[in-house]
Amino acid sequence: MQTLATKFPEAKIVIPDVFRDERGYFKEVFSEKRYAESGMPGPFVQDNVSVSRRNVIRGMHFDLRMAKLVQVIEGRIYDVIADMREGSPTFRQWDGIELSDENHRQLYVPPGFAHGFLTLSERAVVLYKQTALYDPANERAVSWRDPALGIRWPLDGSEPVLSQKDAAL
Image (cartoon, rainbow, N blue to C red; front, side):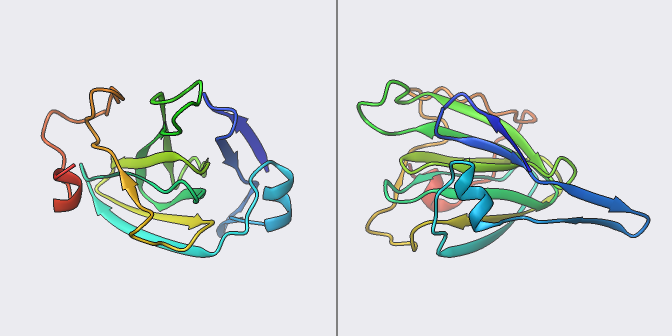
């Protein structure tokens, strides 16, 4: 497993070892011990899967108690995190990376970071682990186009597809 730095010291890109042969590939997508040793403490207590079509933006959601480990099982997304921790030297700064079933990259999203993604492929299946159970009372969100963040989404010229909840932010 390889761990790469991001713009934020607390966030990490993980590239698991992928073992390929004529049948396809095998990879370990999570090991509590190895991830904790690499600075991504758990425990991870809930797993979620989302399926999205091209041009869908999900996010930007956060929970000050919760870290996430995000990976793409099928397809390709532009994954974005933004530091929402007031008082942080990187408050309201953002970073984006491409995650796909081909590059096998995972993104560790620390607590207090908003997270969202744009689906770049026709379909994307995203798996994410989280360190706290979902609780709507603790969920926070910021608009995908909040000018204070200034996220540059690689949109194809059309308006993104949003949930009613995200469109109202």
